[in-house]
Image (spheres, rainbow, N blue to C red):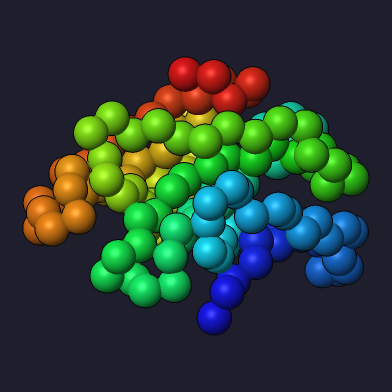
Length: 133
């Protein structure tokens, strides 16, 4: 299907689209999708989940957070998420899995330690507004 990551902002009152941003695929990925969004101040934070191959049984999912200007959609910075010991990692649906808590962006998901491991432990990553741990 070759999904491409796209994010947009709309006016809450009348649902008018304010801007649309087509994000680049991270290096060495086949497809990507934007799955979660959270805001803080004048920034919008977006989670991109990317697949390395078209064949899902062989593919790894890689995670990246992108920080955009909430008013214009301009890219401010981006950061790949390093989940220690993970062969592949993902963040399931739900607002509680990608949210601002205090002064940190909290990302909660699951990972597999190897390609053939059925174990799916949970992970939690905290990032500051500059996307640093």
